[in-house]
Image (cartoon, rainbow, N blue to C red; front, side, top):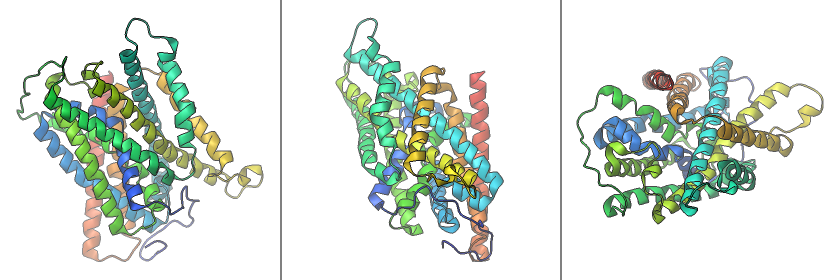
Length: 432
């Protein structure tokens, strides 16, 4: 499909791809896609189940969302093959035009920056709680504070993991991070049946039908939890096998595994604590429980392994901007390869430094998770829908199939617009 121009418009020139090495296996692609989704949202799913009104309504919302989540991934793979681009923003820019492309880049940077900051805050909270468990008593020593642990962790672990040029390298750490997330889901499930000492028995929560507004309020949490679409194009273009059916299978397996882990965590965390469930499920458990202490460590490891994927995606936007800004110019700047170390390393250090500073000095960001989830609806629903509408005009497709695909694209755009509007208004009202 790549390179065809019949029946539609394709970009006149293609930017240099951020990743073009086809070295990623199918199993590696599944783990990277799965780990891209299994982030900080895992801790808030029990709270989302409570907010939805129980296990039944939450499962229903999750299953309906899963259809559009898988559809968005498949559309992005199809759009990448049609446009010949190797990054998400490149696909949108090539198929939908420069105006939509610039909007995509702006949303991309804002969303990934806020996600990176949220990751640092989650890591810092888990490390702080871990230090409280291991060093009980009064005032914690200086080496146990977030202003020491986070910068140290950033320099020794996060920065080296974020420097590689190719996203395929993340398949190794993504495997470790996925296993850490699975352990958290397993611990929450087992804790419900064992009921450890110090955990107050909670009456089984009522499953009365919630108002429709409560059900819709869960969508931002689901979008925040399942957002792996930003990495979809880069992962697809790094795979050795790039057939659309193969990519669809990778997408289905990844999100089904992700849905299973989220559902176990959400359901059993909610059934354990009911209305007392915290937005961070680990904060609801006793701090001296060994299994929970291990879960904190492994979950911090899980977030550390997903941070480089987010940074890679944000860096790709800046690299594309570098390429467009200095294309056709003369001088030393044009000699710098946007993916080479002289550009890649400073951009990586800048990204880590900015997000770390924001995490350390800005107020608590828990109230604006809804805004992050609302922006994520652009990448899950709106931009894939627009790409599908534009992509079906590029290749020769039967009129009936074309009409169905365009209708699905319109539905995706409308649904994404609704979720963005609803979640953003709700988040702003909470801030006020």
